[in-house]
Structure formats: structure tokens, C-alpha cells
Length: 342
Image (cartoon, rainbow, N blue to C red; front, side, top):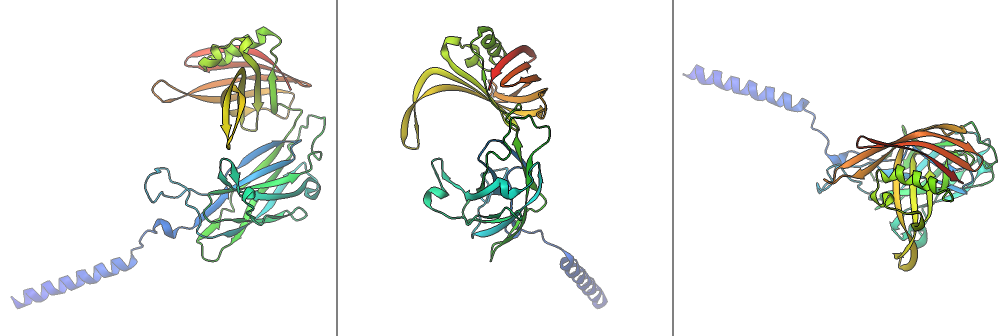
């Protein structure tokens, strides 16, 4: 019996030693608060017209696990202290001397819909050396994102030609300075700012309403996906604009009917509007004639999101644009040709 208890004790001791060894090799996963905060660019690409007097890029924080569990997809958790972020121009196309193009800049963040940090006299210590392409800015605590606004010479790229080559600047994050904050910058990602040709497809175009057939074509094309447009009469419309951006097509119908609108404490009489927004999937834009494809969304009767496909081709002739389009939704197709002026 004694030998039995000795054997059992030895086995228990060996088991205990084995467990201790196993536990020593066990690597516990890091909790969320041990991972560093990551500052990155909000977009990988953005664009401005060649005659703009400024352009901007946005810095933000990567989404993290919501500690309250309210946001299943995560949320931005702001920093606990100010950090200085360093960035650089990594590449440029069609711009010989940055110093001749970029004149200066500033950095701001939104406080509310009517106020930003500059309105409150908050200085984010924006610095940029156009000769070297190096810059820095303070990313402040308690803020989700900041916008770097660059002032440019609006005549530098602006000409009367349809340029066939891309004009762009690429920015990358380099490093940061922080005392105690566990934060890093994403140096792998970049953002490209493309300067869009004013003589090309990009910009704002106004539908020619002098020809009633042109309005009827527009009404049929977009009335397929919007009941308000389908019910319009020409006498109700002030103007129709189609704005083509780098990655979006924005359509605005401005009605003659007005309403009172309040913005930032001020009330004004404004024209009622009908607006549609589509995401560009394909666009040939360094040519005078090319293809366009965009996808729009609308809400179904069961609150689901439905898609419609707008595609076709365009032809430019000076300040006139001809769009030959097909709109496809719910197994229905409408084809129309629209004429617009810049």
C-alpha cells in the first residue's frame, strides 16, 4: 500500500511539472488596449479640378473594438495626448516644381456642423516645405480626424487644353513623435491627389432645358429610379446639374418651388432639390470621348438597398457634352441621349 501511494504521488508530481512547463510556454493574446493606435489616410485617392485654389487630404485613426459594444463594426477611439505626425511627398506627375504650385497650408478639424478648429483659433502647427516635400502637423487628443488643406497657385495647371497625361501628387506618412501614447503611423499606405482637367469630362454640367425633348429624355432615364423625377413637369424645374467627380456622379434637380431652411442659426429661402449620388465604376477621362459606368443605390419597400446600373458613353465638344446612357433597374432598361453645357 505504501508503494502505491509513493507511485501515485510521483505521477501527480510529474503531471504538475508537465503543466508548469506547458504554462510557461503559453503566450496569452494581447488585449485591445495593448495594440497601438494607428494613424492613416482616410482615402487612398482624391481629386480636385485643375483651376482649384486648394486641395486637401485627411488623416484619421483606424477603427478599434468598441469598448461599449454598441458599434459591431468597431469605432474610432481618440488619442489621449497630442502627437506630431510627419509626412512627405512620395511622388508627383505633371508638376515640375512643388514650390511653384503649393503656396502654403493649414490644418483643421470639425467641432460641429457649423464650427471648425480654425474658427476657435486652435493651431495644429501645420508645417510644409515645398522645396523638400516634407511636412508635419499635430494630431490632437480627443479628435477623430484632421484635414490638411494646401493652398495652391490656381493658374499653375489651368490651361485651355485637354491634357492626356495625369497630374497628381502622392503623399505618405513617415513617422511621429509621442511621449507616452501607444500610437504609430501607417507608412505602407499613401494617398494620391489627382488634378482633374477642366476641359475634360470632370466638373459640373447643366442639362439643356431649351429643348423639351432633352428634358423628357432625362426624366425617362432617371425617373426609372426616382418617383419625384418621374412626376416632374418642365415648368417645375429651375435647372438640372450633373457633377462628375473623381469617383462619383452627383445629380441635382433644382426646383422653382422654394422653402425656408435653417443652417448654423440663419434662415434663408432656398430652392427645393432632388438629389441622386452614384459611385463611378469605370470612366475614361483623359480623352474627348469615352465610356462611363456608375452604380446608384435606392431603398426598397422592405428597407433593403437596391442597386441600379448607369452606363454608356460620352462625347465632348468644347463646352458641350453628349451622354448616351442606359439605366438598368429591376429588369427594366431605359436608353436616352442627354445634351449638357458647361
